[in-house]
Picture (spheres, rainbow, N blue to C red):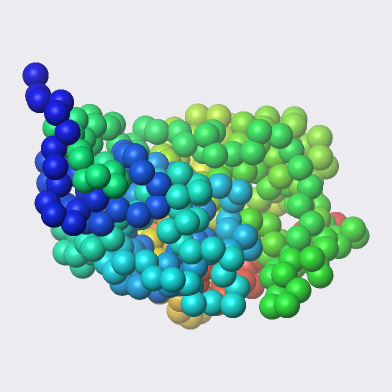
Length: 390
């Protein structure tokens, strides 16, 4: 039996990342104290760390930020994609400084601590990112102890024994538990979200919440839709009880094949009656599964705000925001599903549409938050489609 006596970290180290292969990476802990186990990934965005930490798609993951200066604009109550953070923790290169932004209401360190999330600074994030690119996203434990005392053997065992994301249904853990209306539109400086409201005469979109980001709902409202959100486990009858003009399939975490056990039959029933459908990220993967395609775990995934995507119809390139570790396998698409977008990084499928049903989806995040707004037109395209069908 391993010695459970706490082991003293190197001088100055109050945090540690322990990987499933036994690798130990020391650093300076900040935020909350404690330990959390999950998949270690990396995000290449230069901004939007608060949106990333609160994105439900990061559930059960520890984010390595490749941009060195994370936390320098503090935190505020507006730049969140869900009420609570879903990422387990974050790994950064430089220590978090005092906030320098007129919008900041508290420091990033304080925000993490108040939300029970762990930070680790002083890490060579470039080396860690290279390791993930070569070896794939590893399991790991992030830990913070102000006294620098850690039971390394226990942390190694915890990282080694964590089962990983394959086969894990996390959507059910982050989804809303009951239906609700959404009215807020896009944020504007000096006004926030209060100046916008849903169009009472607009098409009605029912959004199935597999772990959705708030900015998706804001973009649907900005495009002219009325929006009702339902839980991930909503049945076909429960969805249709809201009399939708169209259905939105949201982003979310975990293995799409696991979530698909209850989500796919609902989507298939919606397709049978010709309901217009728009899916993003996990919603894209679930639409693919619903028409008979397969999904697979990616080697390292795509996470960042600088991902080029090429449109199949006109060759135009959009710079997009992405956050996914699974993908629809292009070669498994049925004859009635045609690819519409491809990643220019690795050629993976980034969008599809059905030729015999009013349904389409994209793997990336057209709502951004953070990221470029090249793809906002997709929300207008969907809502215009619903107006035309009304």
